[in-house]
Structure formats: C-alpha cells, structure tokens
Amino acid sequence: MQAPMPQDELHFELLRELTKDPAASQRRLADRLGVSVGKLNYCLRALIDKGWVKANNFRRSDNKLAYVYLLTPTGVSAKVRLTRSFIERKELEFETLSTEIRALKLELPVDRVQRHSAESTDARDKGPASAALRTHGYPREP
Image (cartoon, rainbow, N blue to C red):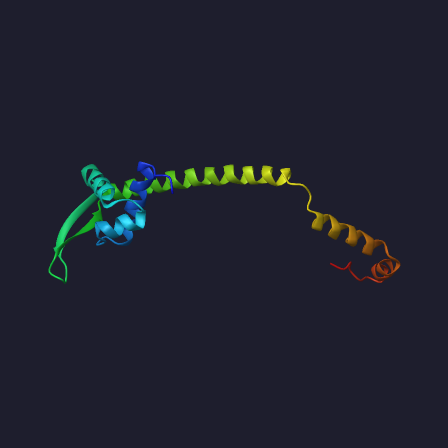
C-alpha cells in the first residue's frame, strides 16, 4: 500500500487536476488522486476556504446539478509556489537516490561475465592476428 500523500502535495495535485478538468466530479478527482471521496471533499473545502478555488454550480446534460472548480488568481499563485516546492523536493529525492544507487553499485562484486569478457578481449588484443590488423589501421574488434 502506498504511503499517504503529504497535505501540501495533495493540495498541489488537486490544483493540477482542477486545472486540467475543472468540471471533474469529486469521485473522479478522488480516484485520480488515490484518496477517498471524503478526504477529497475535505481538501477541496480547504482550498475553497483559502480562496484558491471557486466552485460554481451548473446543470449537466442529464439535468443533474454539478460543480465546476476554477482556480482564483490567488490559487494560480499558490499553484506556482507549490509547483516550485514540489520540483525542489523531487530533485532532492532524485539526487539522494542517485547517490544511494552509485554506492550500492560499488558494493556489488564484479560480475563473472564481465570478468570473462574482459579476459577474452585481452586475449584477442595480444594475439598475432590482432596485432597485424592494428598495424594496418584496422580497429580492435568489439
């Protein structure tokens, strides 16, 4: 199971989804974000209370009432700030993972296939045919 999303990240992802599809239902938004409808509703209300999102109701083609969620100018500014924060956090995570991967690779023993391949390359390079070819300008075999 996936760890719960931090509140700032959930707000950021919700703002992104609302930008892409302002008329999405809360159920669809909850599915896309991997949260319950109740949690989505709570977060959406928080964004509305902050003044980042405005909800307008309209009548759908099946004659049911629905909402369209629009980012306010304050919401657009908040999305920019949250996007920058998200990028910084992900870049730091990437650097940390890259460092960890490099360290783990150094811990691995040399693969026997690599060692065998290197030995056979050395043997080819030392043979008389290989030396003759190189003296005539032919490159070493891969």
